[in-house]
Amino acid sequence: MSVGQSQGAAGSLIVPLVFQNTGGTTCSLQGYPGVSIVGTGGAQLGPAAAQTGQATPLVTLPAGQTTMAIFRQANPGNLNCTPVSATGFRVYPPNQTAALFAADSSLTTCPDVPQESPQISPVGTTP
Image (cartoon, rainbow, N blue to C red):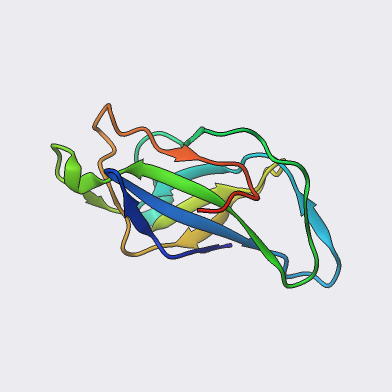
């Protein structure tokens, strides 16, 4: 699990969350990951990301290959708030109960602003 290159678009921050098959055999993913922004000590900052877009078909990943889901939130610089620094993302791969951590030291958020509603696409989505 890693974070791809962030980009801005229409007042939003878009962050690819990259899933890599680090095993020796093919694996598959389908659906939406559970995603939250976290701060120091793993504390969740704001609401979990809501699912957006239509679910994709089964994504088959040979060993070493990657796929991604796209995280989107309002750009904290466009909100009337004091942004809070985050340490990264807590991510539950689709249909899994164990979380992964994807570090992102450049991430900020406004967890107490009502219009701050992060979103996550299904795996297999491209930016």
